Length: 129
Image 1 (cartoon, rainbow, N blue to C red):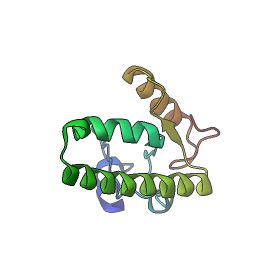
Image 2: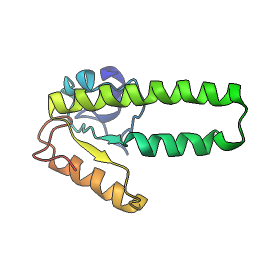
Image 3: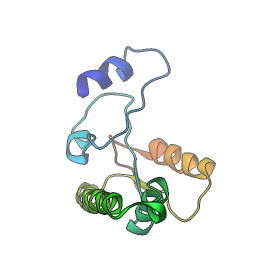
Image 4: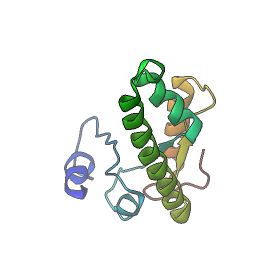
């Protein structure tokens, strides 16, 4: 991961940069990065929002019992992952932005950019949004 980031965001690299997202970007690994011009912000949501979005995407109300069972299993896994992620972020005091509350996308983008601007090291600013 660091090699990919270094090749796109290193001190001698010009260009638009690189945005990475995904569950493989675990806080412990990202917090160790020392690549210049690199920032990290995690987008988080509470369990209710995860459930609402997942049920809508899976058409839960119209799903068969088997499909609901699969959705419930995936949701439980997602909620566990989110809990572990939040613990890892808090443990390392890493920046996160809560995507809940019906905030418009532009407001969320501004919150992410503000967190990036305030970072003193990868993933760490003086305050999380």
